[in-house]
Image (cartoon, rainbow, N blue to C red; front, side, top):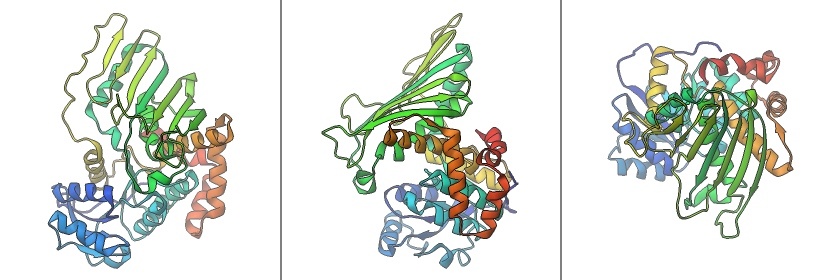
Length: 380
């Protein structure tokens, strides 16, 4: 992967424009306003009244508002963009920002499809700008403890996540075809890649919608992934299961040749392995920057130092590929080989690309795997 541009001034707060003033947008606005590492200088939304109302609630009516990024990028002296739009807008907003010379921190998913994500990876190369997705669940110090505990388990062969919650969001999620898979499962899938230090090979997935569900699409699923080396990872979840709900991070169990470890998604993991004492249960989580605050901190560090972040677009694509492959499997009723799906998406990306420079970069990869390999190995 080519090096991306860094800021000349590594000490002053980074001047940031946020795009998107919806529900999650307001959460990000509060973070950007409170962080000493950044200065919120602009807010872009198609609904100017919504943008102004969000800023008034924040006590920041001084922040510039516009319906388009290019309208205020130069006048505000912006140095970076945080993209909190709906998924369908991620690709155009990310491309506009990068080719305006601005690095981007984008809410997950980085794009609605793998083919669009491949386009974004090539656009990042051509523009020389960092594009990072906010895989916010990676930023739990206790998750790092869980990963460290896996060394006591010998040869890991089985990993499972259970995720059962009943959120009533309203809005676009309620009408999605696969709300759990498309909007939430990427968090668990990305964490599985992080914990196993490995990538998926194939998936068989079954999804359905319980009779009591308030979602239009399938809100429950079981997905069985094969990872490199034969490890099996199973995700079982529902977004319409009230009572005995799991953590937003799910409930995890990983088994190996010499022991097992569990994590409830919040507290310290429990480990039982040969020649080791059981781990603590229900202990306080290790303090530190978590969720989107952790994403923002790594993004700022990266554009100041040039260090490749864990959520860099190239390395994140295989997490998104797990989602798309699971949806394909559920719809077709068959096992999906992720390598095959990835190369199909690569061909689609080249065929659909409208920018000649990005198309040339994509074609130059030769294959999706070749284009992603170096960055994936460096940052997964």
